Image: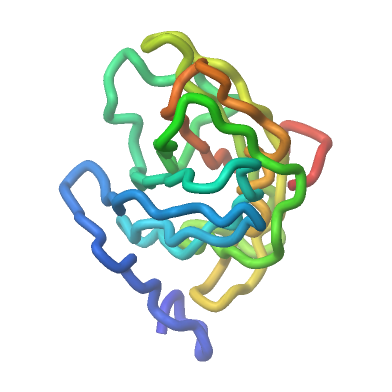
Length: 185
């Protein structure tokens, strides 16, 4: 049981996950052009999966890193509208990637730190030329009761319709408590 809820399963680790004191990571997984879900590495009570829109070209891979702090020094993106409580860094295999606009159902990012029915803002940024960052967008979602306890869904929608044509291959999705934007994930 997690958080005292009777039907809540423990958050599983991702297959092949590596965990350090600062983060957890999972190696590159091939993305389906139809979209799908990726396992979010379990770290400090966070984990689950994220749905993503399909890239328009086959053979694209993505790796994920979970953390609860911005441990990457001064090269971290500008602060979103509030202090993040969780980070999902991603790396794609090509600097020329375009994601489709449809995000499939599924994907639950879970944590006992989330509060059911409370809003959370999802903020995404992409590296551009090493130390500069490009905002990919923001949306909000409300936590609901999920398989692994309080969960967020739809967070991969911040990738929908975006292209990374030479701007970079690394990015970060940040989870911020509160509703700071009007568009829903």
